[in-house]
Length: 329
Image 1: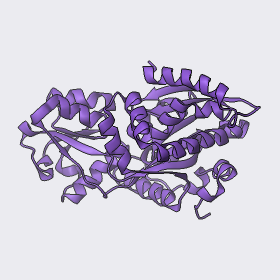
Image 2 (image 1 turned 90 degrees about the vertical axis):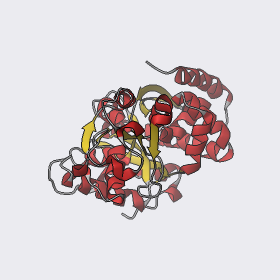
Image 3 (image 1 turned 120 degrees about the vertical axis):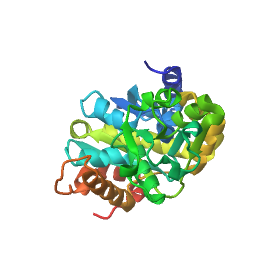
Image 4 (image 1 turned 45 degrees about the horizontal axis):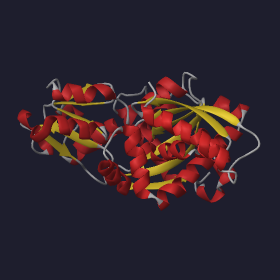
């Protein structure tokens, strides 16, 4: 079911596309967007709310998902969507198995998005108390990779806990019901769980151990059939980037509306984001590192490391903002 915020954004987009003559284009294209409902999707939220896609000549239909991994696996890869957003871990793992998609850009970086929320009544008051506990997360995702790094930081591995893999939407209910002792996730799920548990909740964060990226990807077939779609999507996101820089509080309000979260929590998240649409060398390095982790952790079949440069399609971004491409090729 499409959230009310997206329906309202679509209506606003029609109005803005009629009034923003300076951004309008004579040729119109269309695309289906697979949009994960998490804070890192802020540029997409703003672009939808402000009507930037339509103003750039791209008529969009939005399908929402609880995570970027699900946006890829249930939206983009089956062909139900043309463009999707995801954190980079599912993108790296997909690159081990397929090459029918292209990475168009990273649009933001953040090193303090993920959290671990746990139950105090299970004897958890500090990170090392997770030893032997049932700790859940979404498998093969950014929050799974964060859990891996968090445990290492505190002298543990996944062998020291009882890992449980659940869908994103099941985590809060499982923690509140006592079926698990903790979970690794991001907002709005951590905040919801902490609110429902009240004083029984303990939340751990570990800024700096993992700088992750929100990545824009498209199906190769879409790029081959109509490269204008990717260029227009990137132009809309660059418009959103400029808006967020000028209007941080309004951007937090927009995100809160899409996520049914508090404006205060979104302002806190926004303050941790480094928003910049681009293709930096750091993205390539991160994809390779996460592919090695996935293979070593048994999340992917042992295979030759793919050349992630072949999955990165720099042409569309170079066409609209060439200085944003700093990848070494």
